Structure formats: C-alpha cells, structure tokens
Length: 147
Image (cartoon, rainbow, N blue to C red):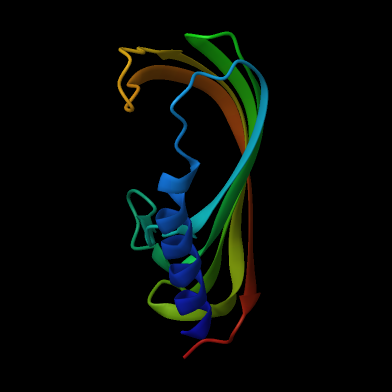
C-alpha cells in the first residue's frame, strides 16, 4: 500500500509541475524529455476453447516512465522514445487453484513518433501525431503453492 501511495504522490507532483513547463514561444531544434507516472494494468482472465481450463491474474499498480529525443522543425517535429512499465503480480490462478502469489509483468516500448502542430498564436497549440513501435514483454510468476 505504501508503494501505491508513493506512485500516486509522484504522479500528482508531476501534474502540478506541468503548467510551469509551458512555453509562449516556438522553440526549434533538438529537444529531449522524460516522463513518469503510474501504470494500472488490467487484470487478465482467459480460457482454452473447448475445455474447462481457465485462469486469471491480478496485478498491483506500478511505475511507468519514458525518455525521448527529438527534433523540431517549426510546425513539424519527430522523436524517438523508450518507455518502461512494470507491475507486480498479486495472484495468478489456473483452474481455480492459486499457483503464484509473486512475480511481475514488464513492458519495454520503443517508438518513433511524428507530430504536426497547428499554431494559431494562442498559448494552446493543438497537434496531430502518429507513431510506430514495438513492445517487448517480460513476465515471471513465482510459485506460491495451491490453496
């Protein structure tokens, strides 16, 4: 519970600090950035078609973060991003029996993004963007014995 509170306080601090980063001028050239937050992973449930075999997994809230490097040409900008999201496994069940009470689910993402800014001279600059990337998934379950 203390870990979840720490993540929530960190995310709130970042949200409060975000307005201080607003700029009233259009900077061009090389830029770098980073972000941090919380990752709320949806619990899994599955079954094998045509059988009575099913399972489910429950996850804790975990940290998320990214770093990126890009270039701004004025109205168009592009960047490369690397992100990490991780969640601890609360419990995993198979056929109604608990078989793991410990483990993790981790996602490492690599993206290439492009954006077009619609600068109308206001403090708010709407944009449209697109990206392509790949995610590398890693999960581990540590046995906890059947109940």
